Length: 185
Image (cartoon, rainbow, N blue to C red):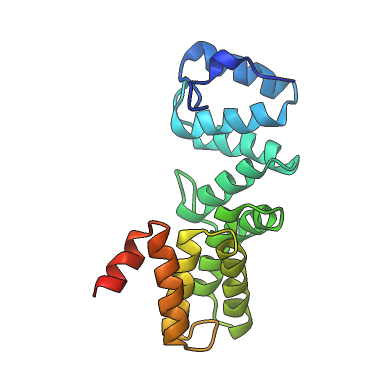
């Protein structure tokens, strides 16, 4: 089921209006996974409707269970930061992992950071580095910067100052401000 093009602006963003939200919601109720994801996002951000995190999570969950990657990432973010819902690290990691496994670079980076930042075991930190490496192979600046940090600290990887500098330079060249700041110091 294709959504009407007038729902979007030239950049592909949802045009926030009650009418557009109703069209999205009708399509979501009819079972369109993309519309379910969009309905969740509209509720999450208050686009054409009032903000409602419970409704957002319900629609995002429906779409995520049908394999919609953006919904998986948005659910993970909601559980990670507690956007009007209680934080739940386990659920955040579950949804990031599912999205990361199907190739979401954003999810790969966030899963890697969660594994590095909150894991007590060496194996989990090593796994975090592996997820960052997958995203870094796609030239993700956040992944490259955080791999540099991991190399500086010896976190999940052997401490290696030369590798850290290489990662930082690559991240800086791709526009990462934290990497630029590190290299300037």
